[in-house]
Image 1 (cartoon, rainbow, N blue to C red):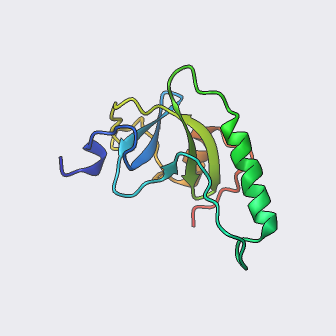
Image 2 (cartoon, rainbow, N blue to C red):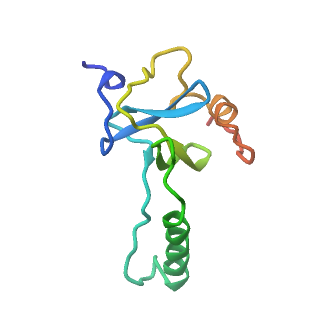
Length: 127
């Protein structure tokens, strides 16, 4: 199991998102590209002022009020080169192989990722 895409993926692991058959799953990885909220809070400072403190509080309140997914998926922030997407990710221990021709990951080009995820406001640049 030298290939990180072949590592087992379990809830709480460091994982990468994988897209296949119109659903998001995960595979274990040494370089994560999604994270389950919460948003971090910090004391007021020059880089985290009252405006950002209040925005963080409001975003976390919205996240906290999202009901659990009836299919058992995990609410996650999916990171792409084009931005961040809030999505349900299946994290049931199955391991989608990132090397499969049908699986799309953050390693794919932006156009492929945007099309697969159905992104509607992405600015596509493959730089």
